[in-house]
Length: 407
Image (tube, rainbow, N blue to C red; front, top):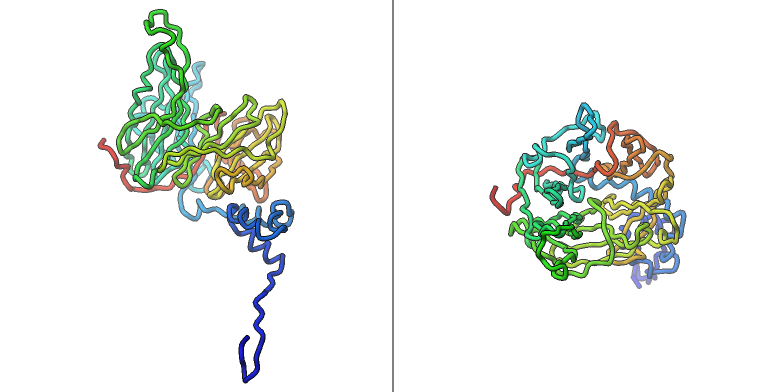
């Protein structure tokens, strides 16, 4: 009660917010918050079944471009064929910055010296720069045995650091290691850059090998590299029962993420996440809307879309791409199928996301195109990329030194 001119007035505390205004406000909130607010009322728990709300949420999500606001340029990494093309089909790695997201305005940067002699089979680990630093990986072969090389590189200062091999990489001749890169990122607690990889071992026939068969180990390993110690060590964590592809992981806020497949058709699987600070591994089951029984292979790719983990899924040779974003790690129900993008049949697979939030896809003729999610308009970039050999991400320049070890 309040008193004015001797009269008592009743103050109303139950101010009602109109439903349309409430939905408009809710559409601006992060997905994790929306999931938690579902307990407020039944209508709020069914927000993602409300077409009107979903249209507002998609519009707001598509309009965001945090990478653009925070600075940085889109980078495009290609494996370009050597000219003139010969029967050997030799390819060279090429790193471009696209300030205006058009290939005609590209800026080509020289790769660091370790890759200037041999620049084939290179890829950008996690398709991301961390504090202005990229991690370039290269698959190589020494005789019959495969090996892996990685280099930390700051394009702005041309500084680089070669990551040494681990003791387990020099496998005895009776087994062949195959490397699956899972992450590159920054441990904020220890101020340390780290690299994660998974090693599978396969038998190599060698009649001269004197190690008894029962003493030969083919158990896979999960390894982590620390720039601060300049060394690799084995991680003793429980890995999910799945197998992996490369280099399709993403990094965000101190956590590396990659997709683990649990069946050959990739119909089922999970998001595997590794926290670089506490070195804990946890999983998030796949979105419910793609868990079906079918005989068609499912193609998936993880990307970062407006500061959210997004999973792009489609059935092989299908023209509909399902884009789901994750609200909370470890919670299967927090996946939201946000976009169903119907594309022309010639669109084959996603490549990455540019600074404006548009997704780059590759066509069957190798031409790269932009897809605007808000309009679903397709525009060509002006470049071609071979299948499985082109990547896209955001590069944010920094002149800070890599640090950690001496040249």
